[in-house]
Length: 336
Ligand code: PEP
Ligand code: MN
Image (cartoon, rainbow, N blue to C red; front, top):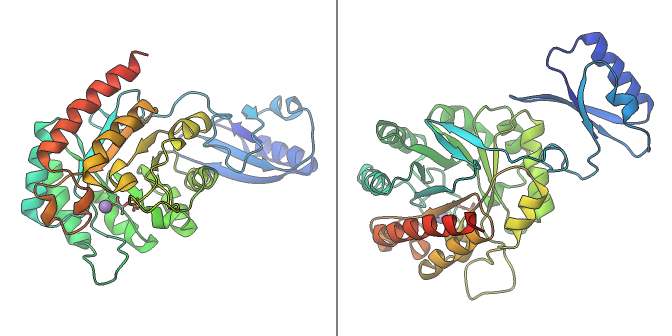
C-alpha cells in the first residue's frame, strides 16, 4: 500500500497515520523524494483503505501488492518524463536518441563524435569512462579525467552526458559532470549502488541484468525511487540465453510488458542487445515499434579501431541512416 502525504503535513498528523496503519499490522517505510512524501505499508491484512485515506494529512492512497510499488503503473497511471534540462526530455512522448562510443577514448574521438551528433541533432551522448570488462587486461576506461575532458567539450556544444557509474565511491566525483548515471547490466542488483543513487538528484538509467527478470529490474528501480530519486529510466539491453548465434537475446517482449507495468520511460539498447553491427538498425527500429521511449546505441568514427565493442558499433554513416529511419519509424508508430 502507498500512502502519499500532503507536503505540509504536521508531525501530529503523521504520527496519527503511522499509528493507525501500524495498528492494522502493517510495517511502514517512509520515502521522501524530489517530488513527494510517501509511506509504504507492507502487510497482509485486508481492510477498508478509506479508513486511512480520510485521515488528515493523506493526499492519496492506493493498494499496490507487488514487490515494486512507487514505480508501478498501479500507483501512477500517467507516463513519467525525465527532464535533462535545455528542453531535452526522455519519456515525453517523443523518441529519445542517445548515441556515442562504447568507451571514451581520446579528445579527438570525443570531438568527432560530437560533430556527428550535432550534424544529426542528437543531444544526448553516451560513452563509458569506467568500463566493466570481462577481462581485467582489456581497456577499462579513462576514468574521471576522461569524464572531465568530455564534459567540457559536451557542455560547450550543448550535449548531455550519459555514462556508467560502477561503484558508490565514484558517485561524488562524477556528479558535476554527468547528466544521467547509467547502472550497467552487471550492476543492476548492486543494491548499495542503487541506494546511493537514490540519494542523488540526477537521473539514473538502469540496464537490465543479463539474468535479470522484468520483475527484478522493476524492484531495482524501486530501490532508487525509495532512496529518494524519482528520476529513473529503464533499459532493455538483451539477456543471456542458450542461443550463441549473437551476443545477447534482445528481449523485445520486455518493452511492452515494462510499459504496461511501470510509468517510467523504457529505452532500448540494440547494440548490446544483438551485438552485431549489421543488425543493430533492424533491432533499433523493431524496439521503436514495440513502444520504446528511446534508443541508446554505439557509434564511432572508425568502429574497427574502437577500444571496445567495435563489432556492434555503427560508423557515422550507418548512424546517420539509422537516425533518419528511427524518426520515420517513430512517426509511423505515433500514427497508429
Ligand atoms: C555499455 O553500455 O557500454 C555497457 C557496458 O552496457 P551493459 O551494462 O548493458 O553491458
Ligand atoms: Mn559497449
